[in-house]
Image (cartoon, rainbow, N blue to C red; front, side, top):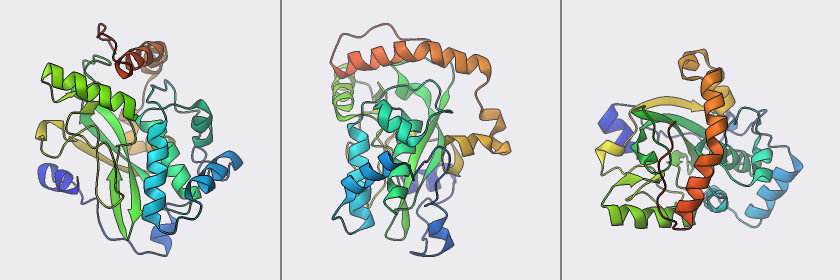
Length: 264
């Protein structure tokens, strides 16, 4: 994945070395309003997941795998949501599941953050039909053994991903139903892993790297990202469309026949 960004798009190397201690590490351990790492419910879950694990890599993989078990589902308005709120909700999308993963890792004293990119929108084929060429996407970055490792393989739950792969094979497609057919199903904590794109398929790779942030709120609060903020009409559209999107996702997960695509 780092070669994907660096070589194909001339973007920054995601895997820059970071000291194991000091401000560079502490920066990505702090809580925010959305990353409510002091929430008892969230801290209890982080402790239960990582109890007796010794290394950041082990903790990162276990937390990743837990977040992956949560069903993928569109959250129409993530602006009011916290990580502990998502834990209670029980399902999420790339922004909200990423937010939960980062918060759980920070609660377990593993530095983590989100990186925001633009992805070609055709991986959403079969879920929602958009007139835009690209869509915003959030990927988690975790500091493991002094290097940042990027992953979004926790976004689709295993049942959805398996059904989507089967449908893509039947239709002889590379992208659709929220994934890439060659995308990662697992993460080892030592390499980069994406379910939505494949480094061997240039057409699936991010087109823009918008940089890193603690959470969606802090990312969109940055004035340099003001043009990316959802306006009222867009927020209303997603609020109305979310139940239909989630119904479509559930049908794919359970292998139901394809329904008409939904317009965004």
